[in-house]
Image 1 (tube, each protein chain N blue to C red):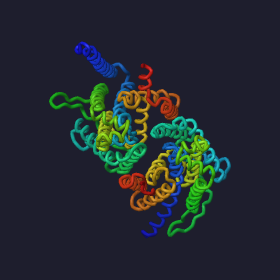
Image 2: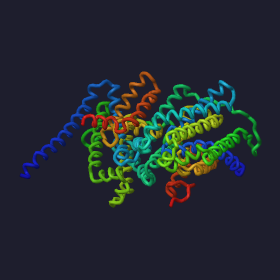
Image 3: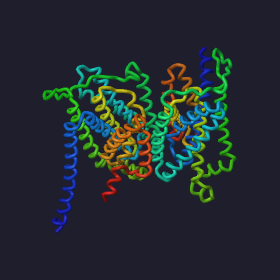
Image 4: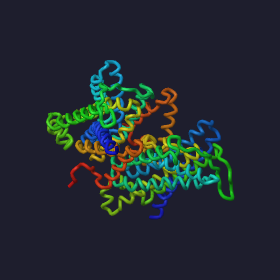
Length: 288
Length: 327
């Protein structure tokens, strides 16, 4: 009985871990490239989910909703980056936390104003179940995990082999040198922010069917994403993915015994231990 | 010769200090008279601004003087509230001073805990860690319903103002305002003295150049821990005052959005000035009143926009901006 529960929670942990990884990899990408801690990331996730609900109502297609939300929020991200973060380039990274915190307040209250306090539901694209021990496990959850993995994998391939991906990596390593080699650094920054925002929006749409869309859903997520990013090592894509899965699994196992609200404390404890033992992150090579 | 050369300067310095104290006395006197003149709503408004101003001042010790942006001050504030609630609910008859002691002790213990872990990290890592810590306390308080009342929080009766053998009287809104004003003024004078002391100078040197401060031989970590604890205890004091004024302790005040508002007060008013954050709190609440008329509960939309623009274009805040203009 307990073994079955553990196995079910493993699957659950992996699924929510992949969603978290999708959000966190956008966050860590933005941090790695421009030293911006994007406090508004959770709000982009939430707005993505809302755009998804409206598109779904209009077109009836979940996949169209996923696409439209990603593109629209990506554009919104680009606009936000140009108007508020570009002027801050070269200043203390702390000012970017403050600026994006201001943005997150605006976006969150805008969503409350526009969509109201009642949670909305995104209909899942397919409703099939399969049998997992004594449970009917929805296929959709597995699809989310696979899709998230595919998006992260696509990002990784793009960063590794795409021309623009190489631009991004060059900008991460040395901003001044990259710009001397003719890479349009400001454009790369805007592009990266847009990619991060689009990834947040995509995870919002994917996650929507599981929890219901409301204006505060970003708050809860951003905190866990921050923990993941710190545990995985700031700016480290692979580390973030591993940390997201690790933390989600830990929380899933904990919620066998305590309520999910208290299971969050497990990830806090993981964070504290990480900070004590390895402040640079669990999944990065030891710095020389 | 030297005597005559020195004395005018010494004289000028003295008048400068005298002018400062005169100004402070004038402002405190004005704030003391205000509740007698103002209508009920604005009197309460003023008392709240003083309390939030104290919280903002306490975080200025970290943000403005030591260069560490704390996103976790709601934890200290909230624990101050719950500590007071604990004293007022368990000890009978309810005692004002015991409530303060419990509140400060709770905030102090939490501050020591947070300081020990968070000061190992710098910059944004410090901010994120303090944020996560405040959420730990939020989750604990929110879910531990038997002790903390969970979502509903705790309500209690307001303790009477009591000095043994001298006076014992129930608070009226006006005397409560005076009490708050007295506590906030004393805290301000103490904090100002601390920032001007050698200890405060070391904090400012950590802000300016941490490796160099360490190279000179200061134990930077120890200074940071003390700074966080000091800041946390004064934040707890603000929480105590807020609990006494409102007669409740609620988990909402431990939630990190409160910490965010405190950072907003600092940025709006001017970091590293102590008075600035109080002004920032006043401006924030005035803006909230103003925009609530047009935007109802969505006032944070315009306030957030103003805040973001201030971060970009006026990073020294209103007070810094005014000072620069005056020069």
